[in-house]
Length: 321
Length: 190
Image (cartoon, rainbow over all chains, first blue to last red; front, top):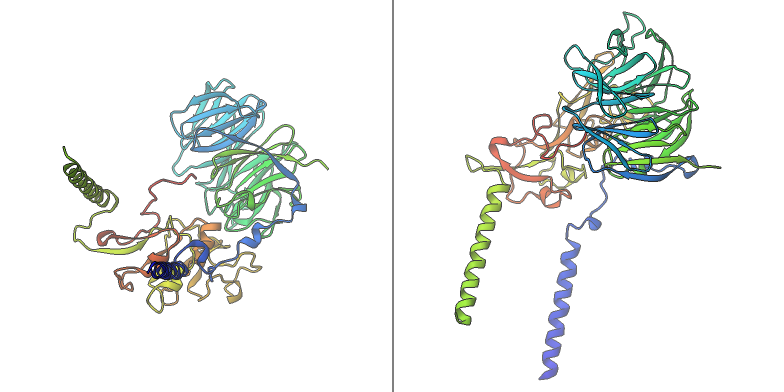
């Protein structure tokens, strides 16, 4: 009688195990789902030959504020703007200064001790202590300044809203605008499908402007005439992919360009002639990320990337041979 | 209070709490339809383009179709939703197209802009173009359940398998979640 009970119990247990196994096979568990037959195969572009990677990530700086908008390097510290704030952070991550802003900035650049911050309707100049020194209004609708570059007397601003570059004297006088068209009859100049439009000065003072719809970097004279360009269209590591890119640029002390792309998020260094120099951060560094990091370069060539998805500043140093 | 009364009262309170939780969660989490009718719809901000919409709908050709939020489109020449990644020539050759059924059409507007439209009779809702557009473009292409095609099953066979729980019942009065008009609950950073 006792054995019968045990046999019955074991039989029921075995039946229950079989039922559980069958139910598990029919379940919707992630690891049991078949592969997506319509996968577009982006993974192959995420893999980068490790020999091409010339930088290593040495530090992550985590900031409390979530809604960051941009980053710049100047006065031996990092400057970060976000929704209604500007803050200065040491290169080790210590908070040095934080000031509230009365509205949301769109981009930041620094020349010597002058900090320029753009808003939807004005540009302001701030001092090192965060005090506002000067401002001037931006005339017109649909203006979206997404990048700026300054030297002693001139501030160039990239207006993604109107697809043009505005050239200001640093006292706010508008000196010129140019839209990337070489002559009046040209059908298009800057092509900006999404709100990413950046520009930068090289160490020898040349102005380079991204033409994202053409995957190009274009060199302009101070008067706004196209002097030269290079473009690289490729989902491979040697070029820029998708509708538009690069989304952000910065310039290294040797004149090479640091580029960041959206979609297939990656950071690379291109030589001044456009050829790929090295990879800073392959797509695998940005799992699930879609937003192009904003870039800043330190005096010693250290690259700072403001990762909007991870909400951190990532610090990359060149690997010494 | 004896043990019997204690257990009875505890049971009553637990039942009452459960009922209140159920009522509250239904009231706060689910938008109420004035007509009392609900339909299935995809939240485009949750969708991960897993391909299940093409393979799991009970209809022969899925009721899920790609739709286009033109206000978000960049009208790009190199459209990540239209062209395969790393395509060498930007023309309408089938070998260059990402769409497996040729449902996404490309039309020249003016230099350098192109308009993209969807032939719904060909679209199988696979989401390849959506993946490409979301990855490389502005995300203007997205998937929606077309209610002239959907049989509004009691249990949507796609919703059951959706890995991101992007498909839910919504009031029939707001039957579509079109990007541009419909925004995610928490805005993503620019």
